[in-house]
Length: 216
Image (cartoon, rainbow, N blue to C red; front, side):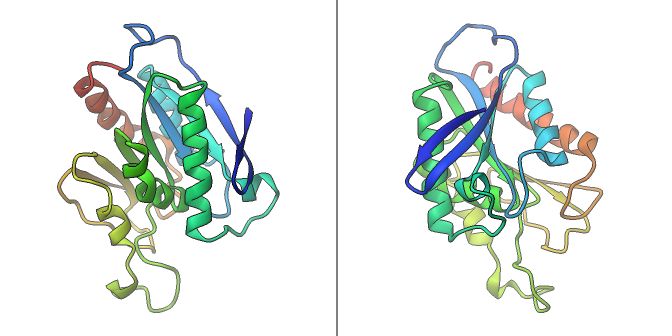
């Protein structure tokens, strides 16, 4: 675990590194950078499963704790604050321990939203969304697309592939597929409690991405 200063206080990143990927330290190595949900941490089942899928493919992983969670708070700050801190962490990682790596960014729930909003700015190679909260909480959310967060998913450029892994019974809705965006429904709700199902969804997508880039 390393501490990284951001404009909004210190963040933390837990680095997990498999054995060196074939080809050495070339610029096409991949790293998966994942963020947590609004009130959760980096130990959730789905984040752990995505980490395991990446490590099995020789892809490095960084699990990021936002400054508000490092400070012991559960309620997240505004989106702009989350995004600024996330970008600072990603840039510090690529300038340091993940130097020479192409970044796949992502996270669960709120962390997925942050990754989508910042993917273009960071020049991400791909985006992994676990339990993307398409519709905000509230009694009117079912069938009400006026408050949909689909614009955040659509903001990812078509040149950047996106994977959404979503519970079939997620009360926050099911995002639609689109150009360069794959949506994999799995059994479960917003918690994505089946690590096996998450690994089965994430692993082949990462493998294809790594293959397209000439290896991890």
